[in-house]
Length: 203
Image 1 (cartoon, rainbow, N blue to C red):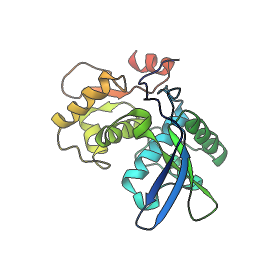
Image 2: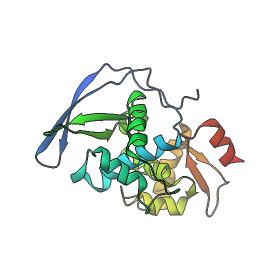
Image 3: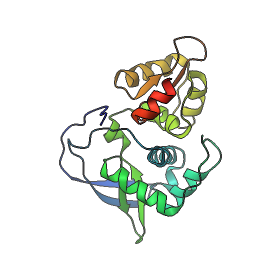
Image 4: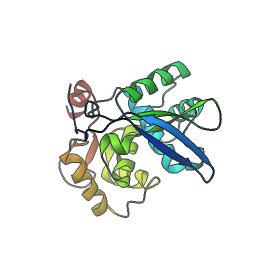
């Protein structure tokens, strides 16, 4: 299996998560050397993209309930392609993301579980880089200009020069893949596609 970025070896930790100004959640988050970054299937990409997006754009509602994750996956704006996933599909996908170290299930004041991403740890990226990857996970290939504007709704990327600095870092690690040569309207996508999908999009 194609591995993209090894993670530092860490043992299971208890991590305290603050939501807004009042709600605290505690989750046992396993992180170890075996959880290297791997390609994601399309449902996994959509769910992880939603968790990244909502953490940045609606932090007061984050971590997300299962129903909120389903709604985020199926919304029609800022999504390509538009999907229609049900709770069973999303729940199964969340289990897969938890198993690979990209997401966690947490419990707050109520009994229902909620879900958060571990993408900062899993991908070892900075906040603007995660905004870029989150946007690519939700929409797939796009031009530099479109990507800058869309990713800036999560974290400000002031200009193309700043974007390209982040893209160079991500491309060096295989997390971003260029699809056209340098120049106006240059296309790119994320590097979390399966090998077959990556070959298709590069073809």
